[in-house]
Structures are given as C-alpha cells and as structure tokens.
Length: 142
Image (cartoon, rainbow, N blue to C red; front, side, top):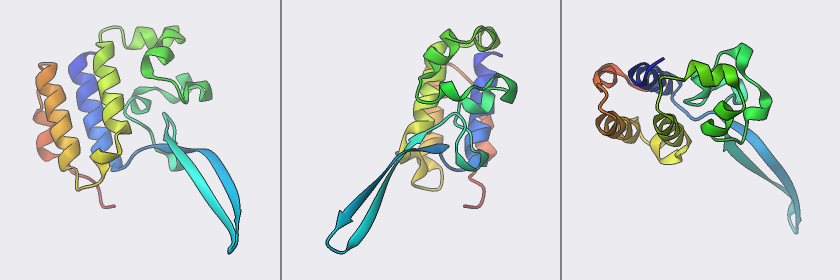
C-alpha cells in the first residue's frame, strides 16, 4: 500500500460509513433525588459497535485485528504487529496518524461532510496527494 491508496481508501470509507466508529469505554450509574441516572463514555475504536470501523480499522484485515489494538494509536499498533507493519511499509506513519485524528475528531461529523472534506483536502495538499477521490464522495443517508 502507498500513501495515495491509503488516502483514497480511508476517504471513501469515512464518507460511506458517515459516522465515527465508537465503543463503550465506561458506564456510570448515579443515584439522584429523582431516581437513577446513567452516564456513558464512548471512545473511538478500530472496530466499533454495529460493525463500524475507524479510518485505520478499515484498512486492517479482520484476520489481523486484535481487541488489544483498542485504545492505542496507530504507531503502537504497527510496532506490535509485524504483519501490519509490513503491510504499511510504504506509508508515512504521520499520514496514518493524521487520518486517525480526522476520524476521531467529532467536529468532522457534525455537518453534511463539509468539515470532513475540508480536512481531507488539507491532508491531500500537505502530503502532495491527489484529492480527486473527494469529488463525488458524500455521506450516505444518516
């Protein structure tokens, strides 16, 4: 895989999925004067609820995915997996980090994809990649 292929696959995936991949990190129950209240903390995930995948998770074959990846940045995942490290040998690590950050930033998911598209266009420019894939991408019905 090379930088352009990673960019194109992730951009396509993010628009097709239309939302972040999340998992439940913690659930807290509070007793209040009015009864019981619950609070949940969600976090981004390589493999999330409902079969969703984050930017990098979309590139990881199911047979190479491990639940222990959750909560780790992509650099740590690649360091601990020789197979994935080899798979991404031709890809800049900082590009993978940036694509992961774009997925994880909730602000990219609040509109109809405008902010996501703008951030992906900036990545394409910064890494000297073609943004052509972005031309026809849009969120699926959400």
